[in-house]
Image 1: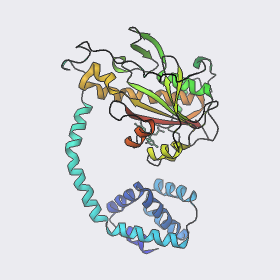
Image 2: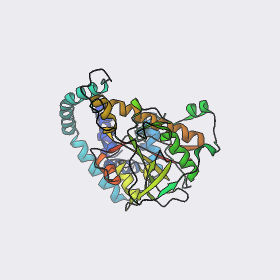
Image 3: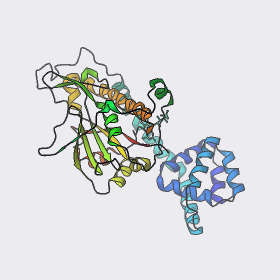
Image 4: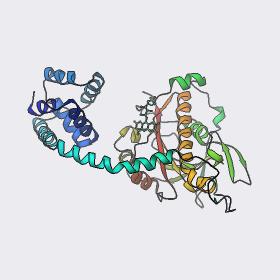
Length: 351
Ligand SMILES: Cc1cc2nc3c(=O)[nH]c(=O)nc-3n(C[C@H](O)[C@H](O)[C@H](O)COP(=O)(O)O)c2cc1C
């Protein structure tokens, strides 16, 4: 056993688990940790695995199998870095506990937000005041072409049984390099945001998902990497017309998606990423302070439909709630106040 592993194992069980968590949360430390493990002989590796849960040991074995063998110098550096973090562990725990104390108030506020219900006490809402209803979708930029999408109703499903799709659905993170077809994309867009009815002179829509007060506060952006007949880049869905509008191709889109998804590289690797933004005023116009909880509930419906629709096509998706707000808003060039990213989900063919 190396000194650093011995030091880890001499921690109390609780401190050891905290150390592991903190190490794995940091991309750099995580790599150092794996290098230290790689530097152990197989017998010592097994001895270490016996100290942790079987599930975690399995996870580490899998990670190690995907890594290049480190040089002796890299192992030595990794041991030094981890020894330093171990020496600082108690100070780090203290710092984090102080943050926890400050968060008590924030947690109270967030709990109250979760209890916010549509009640009769909304004050004078903009709807009541007769202010104009916000439009149900963003306008296409002047002169920007609209891309036709195939009729979603004509696609032959791989798994047409709804019970099968609900039962088999799971978060899938491994995709092949195969492109998605435009037919598949059209079906996924329709099943998540498709418009079935437009009423009130084009100001209200009924869609394939429910939404409190039929406010439908979302826009669907697509980061297209590999879809047949579409140039890679960013697109927005125009649900009323069931068409796409091309926005632009960001430089280094794949890297930006990965950074935006906090290093979850299966996101950037997927053929297409659904990125939903919210325009909060669409909900606030009607529900004022009660709008925000409702809009978050709405967002769940979007993504659940994507899961089930993917399952019915034999495709995979995985909801992503862990992302950088700033980086994702920047990627889509959103102002981050009147419109910002709320949820994303990559889609791909299954390995
Ligand atoms: C709101 C929400 C946010 C999520 N965020 C992430 C994420 O950022 N990264 C990820 O890999 N999985 C994410 N997931 C997927 C969950 O990890 C997954 O649903 C959970 O582990 C249960 O697995 P299952 O979906 O296969 O049943 C998220 C799921 C939800 C509903």
